Length: 354
Ligand code: COA
Image (cartoon, rainbow, N blue to C red; front, top):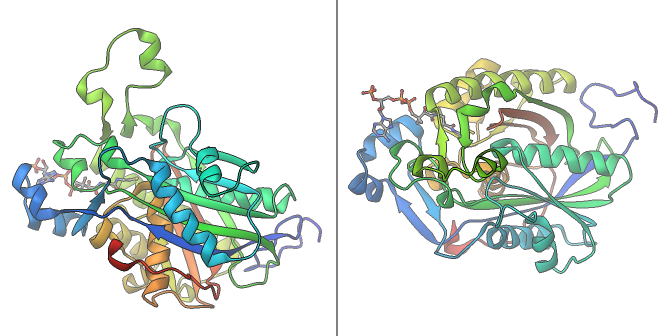
């Protein structure tokens, strides 16, 4: 099919090949960090955390556990859920790679029995999973890939200062994954209407100042603050609402969907008040927002696939529903896309892990 013939609402690409979501899995570590525990050791209260963020608890890795461990667990669940052929591409979206070099994805691929496949990381902070989906969809549309495993995985407990009450209350560890296969634009599960953006003038709003070439080449040892994740919460809140709303609006317009036709909004799980503000801006009922914050907090690049997995497990997501994904993260970066929810077999039991 040729360029320029894409009908509204279709996930058709210029090549005519769409990416269809056909597998889903999530995994969080066992250790639960409650608001009560945080309020015992930080200058905060359980009430402040739940009312200002919507977060009830979050998970944290055990000493020595790394992002690849979480990514492998979520990835293997997504592969089981998808069944069928082995993917030829593995993308890991993360801000907390196992090491600064090399990327985490090749190791994850190898541990999942996929030596030899294309494997690389995507670095777009909390927008990483949506950027990863867009990258995989582009590779599938171009015929470079037939089937891709896209994982969002982060271990924020490794970069957040445990004494920083602003960030320690928000972030948790986790991983979520999907399998995409080449398919038709009109199938349930076909991803479409990606809208991505960035603004590097806001790089200082979410940052780890040390550990990169700027600090290392200076020869100056980093301070404690520079080694940890830092965020200007109030301004990030404002930017997150602005950019998730505008990219979501553009994605819906490209799809030809009216706000009241959207059944579920799965936004980056940053703060319940952010999710509600985005829904209000878009004119979508707040009760159509999927929220998994109360259980896991903000899990960075894992937040959207974990929320999808949770919502699919509890029946909030049902086949045929019109779903909007929207994310915002450091960079600054943002992105949105749409799909009609597929009839997939999650094929996994989460037991006590969620
Ligand atoms: N416990 C108790 N009080 C706290 C607190 C905590 N954990 N953190 C901040 N406060 C205090 C502040 O010091 C401030 O006190 P003051 O009025 O005496 O100065 C007051 O609460 C309000 O602070 P403010 O920063 O305006 O709070 P907020 O309502 O904006 O909430 C965040 C702070 C971080 C929860 C909120 O800004 C947020 O969620 N930002 C976006 C985070 C995010 O989404 N990040 C990821 C994006 S990818």
